[in-house]
Image (cartoon, rainbow, N blue to C red; front, side, top):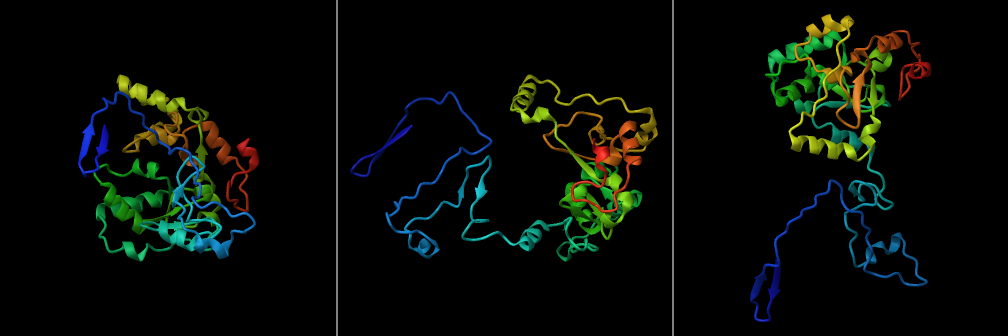
Length: 290
């Protein structure tokens, strides 16, 4: 439609036609900002002249794939303090970084007011007694589906903290347990598996086409090795994706070494020489990775 504004203040709306095509984008268009004030020849623009300009730089602009806030880190404002980043990330669960001297030993004070579910707390205590480090997807296999996400969030805040980086990135660790000081924690480390298929742009279109055609999106899981049959029988909500028994469903998929149901991989992990010095990226030897 087209809106016309007349001199007497009257406005008329004219219908130009019907929109028959619509385009949607999952990333912003690339653009640059050009200042309205031209540079003056022979004059230097520096920090002392910054406040004299008569225009405002837009807070959000990009020359990369996703929107970036220029005021979070720039030549004028400087980098945001790391402590502020950590404080902002500690919304509910305590968070640990690989370079931290100490790991959380108690829940955040702001999150102990909400009363937890006693049955869920007992279930989590039993789970962390089995092993002290879990991925969330692996933990959900052993928790009843009747517990809501909110109840889980409250209980997680009282029982565990999250590792933000390093070999246990994304894992939920028992409060007070430091995997960096435990040589046996190498089996709990994660691998970030990235399927080359997801580097192409066709996987999204294929997924959408299959959804429109009513075809199933899930790939049938591989048969479980007889060695792990008894283990699978004891898992209440068995998820084959956790154990690498089905192809990854996302570009970046995390797996814990101890959860991969493959005899060859488990032999590599068990026969691996444990490094005395825990590296940020791996605790296994380079030979195991090859």
